[in-house]
Length: 220
Image: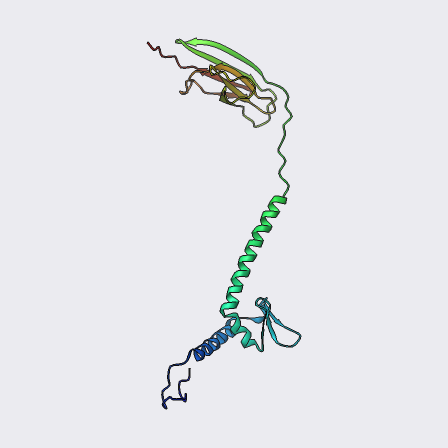
């Protein structure tokens, strides 16, 4: 900034610039910088109106020349409006994505036509004073690649019979057959290897499960 030839200043020196002078100098630097890095042809908010003056469509301001407009784009007002527009567009995009997601058709659940209950055989034995149940279920028409499953369910989970704390249920499932359940004593089941291990014979289509109950400890 030229500091010479100012009122009250000595030749070869100059007083401190006033706030107005500093603002003018700052705007000039911003304008020169903007002219170097900004291409007005790619600015979506730059417009030349019917009067031949330059207009900022974002801030709705008028400018007499390109330099004035470019200086405006580096100012606080324009930058704040850019941030507001970006935030608003982000919210609009999220809302559109949410609406599109809601309007997407929900995937139809695959409904398997049940073909009845599988055949079964239950054998009761006693081994070393422990009660043992041996289940065999026959799934001749099971879906290809499907392996039957089982689970133990508390009497209080089911909604078909009146809950009885003395019993629990052993349920078997294998598509397209209906689920089948067995009412068994509500005693602890041995979970050690070989004592509660299902076996699936994929050639004969037989699912077998050995259930051994733990012995009740005698309490005096």
